Image 1 (tube, rainbow, N blue to C red):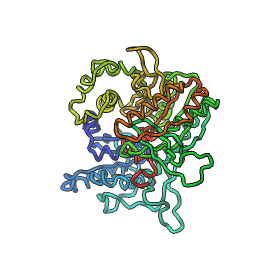
Image 2: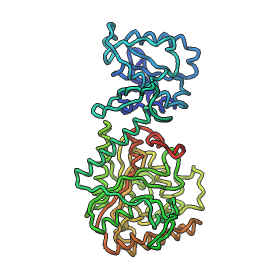
Image 3: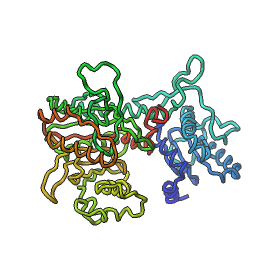
Image 4: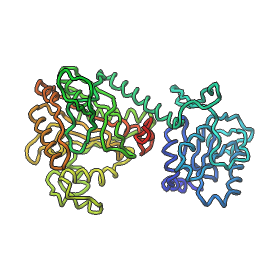
Amino acid sequence: MTTDFSKRLRQEQTDAEARLWSRIRNQQLGVKFRRQHRLGGYIADFYCAESLLIVELDGGQHQIEAARDAQRTVDREAFGLRVLRFWNHDALARTDEVVQAIWAALQEPVPPHPNPLPRQRRGRGGRVSAQTDDSLSRVPEIAHTVTQLNLATSRFSPSPPSPTGERVGVRGALPSHRTSLILRANAYRRIREFFAERGVLEVETPIFSAGANTEPNIESFSVRFSGPLPDGGPRERWMRTSPEFALKRLLAEGVGDCYELGRVFRDGEAGRRHNPEFTMLEWYRLGWTHRELAEETADLVRALMADAGLALEVHRIEYRALYREAFGFDPFTADVETLRAPLSGLDIRSHELSRDDWLDLLMTHRLQSGFPKDRLTVVFDFPPSQCALARVTGQGADAVAERFELYLGDKELANGYHELTDAGEQRGRFENDNRRRRARGQRELPIDAQLISALEHGLPDCAGVALGVERLLMALAGTDDIAEVLAFAFDRA
């Protein structure tokens, strides 16, 4: 087999291979696996040199090739390797069980073997006890232990069984599940270290608020308070979609550079990339511009990815230049028909969309998918109509909203602004949001009067950014499924 053929197999992986690889890559089981790895004249689907373990995924054709597969297994074991075989459909439908079986195999000792592999083979030879006659069974029995991670070495080791000999934990608490929880804990620790080194204060603000997020494209959850209200405030309270309003009130009180790492809530957002409750990291820097803050945001993401052994380049581009390079028109001045043209192949109910909606669709459906996976893309200076809570500078055709978005591959990770400090302008934007809501048939929402009051008191010149932590964890875990980085996703909460 040639190296080129091995490379082509990696590029043309099956759905089962892609799904399993997303779960075992980047040392998520404490060891490194190689994909479509050449061993002499044999190419293994997945290979761990440290534990001398081969994992093979077999399609339906292997039902009539069982004898050949059995001989291949014997040949590999003769060189001190262990072989696990699974059906493709099990890797797709029973992924957790497959990962658990692989993890169990990794816990077995690998004593030395007197007959090493030929010299051209990489790694060390080692012999383990041969599989029982069930060497072709697809899911081996799992020992009654739970995993325990040694954070100093990032290696898994079995913990003692419970006194009853039964497995400790609950349904769903699989080794891969525990790994994702540890991944989150390590990311939190690294984030806090990052800001502690820079003198940025961690704060905690309320989840419930009398004011809501009026943005028409974001829906809030609300609850009703049943107890006494000595201040006569509203019984209906809104669960925060971001800690932004409360953090700005702290800034106006003089707290200085600060950040919050906490849960936020958005109604109507559930799927492979969204969960109604998720973790947001939001922080503010006094006296900074949005461009300075974008650099710090990129530094944080690169530091976290570097901890996982992944190096990222950063590409910076202005919004106007990005659209001009891709489509040949100026997104600030092009008419709706021009914006629609690149999306002509999509089934879109166009009568409900505004000009900004078309610009957003171009980003999500035409531009993001082309961003390289190993690159951070930072897009600066948006059209004034997309200013949200950002300042607008310049006049006429030169006016821009001083904000940025940061993408890791094709995933949007962060959204930052050079913050608006004008209370009257901010109130006007909230009121415009409610007019748009009314036009769409949505409920108008209460404006956060306490934020307006804080702006009137005086918000210092600052830049702020919000980063979706689950999106970052998904990149670290190599998955496109948000459920794989949550303790329990919405359908299991």
